[in-house]
Length: 309
Image (cartoon, rainbow, N blue to C red; front, top):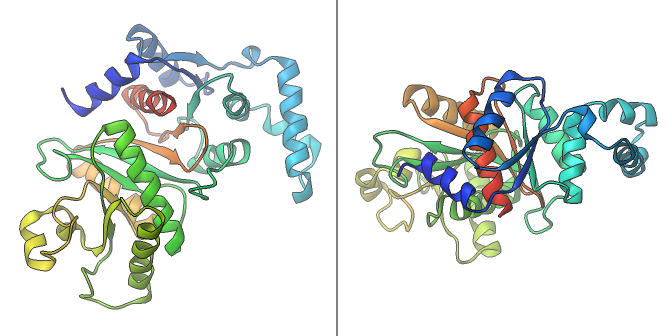
């Protein structure tokens, strides 16, 4: 069974209620039919008429009360909640649904803003970030071609603590969703001091912070990507590393590297890229690329459902 089939099967074993607020997108409609037919999740295509008007008024009041100190006006909040995306986020927060998936018709910034402003940040992780599940065909690296890449969508220039938090959150997702023991590599253009730069210092500091926050986590850095995933290279560059040559969770030093990296692998290696999956929140939700396929919607919904189990 391939990783995509396995994800759908796990979701099917304990179906959760997932909101799809982009009711006007044909891909969402088609994906909802597949999700229901295959019993992967109990999906609600959230049209405006499915939002209780009393709930919507309460969401507006609560959101305004929470954000008014930052200068937002009640009229602008009412405008925000004309979009079912924000209603989906608030319904998930309240437990009316187990999670939500959007992004086919919204930018990642729109999706992240709704999620971060409406849901709560996990105080242990302290930041919101994102990751992709990458399924690379005919690949012996990682976990038989399966990887988690982070952060590829949210934090432009993470500091050391943020990189550490991204690492921990991505590793936890790898264990929960994919059932694989996470082996985390903090990536760089340097391997174990082969170069020196403030950027590399940020990565090495992140390693120490992650180890102090999660002592049981198998993590190492800084590692070049070949040293991280190719055993033969790892033996030459860092033979004593507990991760090198076997990494299945790749942490990129900044958003540019992460975004470029996942798209190169997706296009040139013909990999499936599931995500961005938002991390660091107390409720599960997933973003979608605006270029997503129907299958992408189905599989991101399945991952979101598993996270809610």
